[in-house]
Image 1: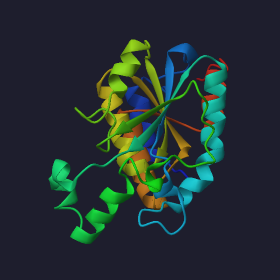
Image 2 (image 1 turned 120 degrees about the vertical axis):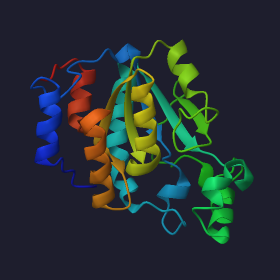
Image 3 (image 1 turned 180 degrees about the vertical axis):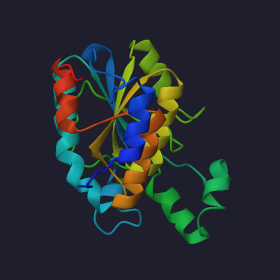
Image 4 (image 1 turned 180 degrees about the horizontal axis):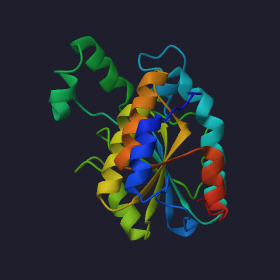
Amino acid sequence: MHKTMIYPEIRARYTKLKGGREFAFNEINPSKTAHLIVDMQNGFMLEGTPLEVPTARSIVKNINSITHTLREHGGLNIFLRFTTTTASEWSVYFESFQAESFSKAQVEAFSKDSHLHNLYKELDIQDQDLIVDKTRFSAFTQGSSNALEILKERGIDTVLISGTLTNCCCEATARDAQQLGFRVIFICDANAALSDYEHNTSINSLAALFADIRTTQQTVGLIFGEKAA
């Protein structure tokens, strides 16, 4: 698990912007809250895969704790899966940011019929939870998924974000969610990147303008109705 660090100067700046408050949201309504679990798939979780994120295995317990608690309090869990079809449908990424061999391997790994596309077996997934495929880093990019429609239909106003990678799909989804009008809580010890540096860079960027940064313990407390200063 990453050692999360919010830099003092950044914390001081956003606390001042909020009128002396560290957090924007000191309470949530679980029935209007969705937990978005981002890309906890075999392709990122299993040892030896081309896109393995070793630290992601260490956050499963925390993710399950949030998932279980929110479910018991009437909230919604959505397990997002990164899904690929062909490189040509997102050519600027697959052709410009990756070597051809790696691009081909990634498209194959995250196609719907691949074992690597499946969700990691240690996750707590129940029948009432939703599984949603997305075709871009953010679940809310136009055409990526139907996540936005689901949240609107359910009357959701708050999203909790966990998963991997902190600085890619999780951050992209968090930024878009806030700009779409959702209250965003980003759970620092339930997100994973490839390094502490990348994780913390993302956390500090989000904390300044896009999301409250909370621990799993704090988030579970909010679900139970414990108000935070």
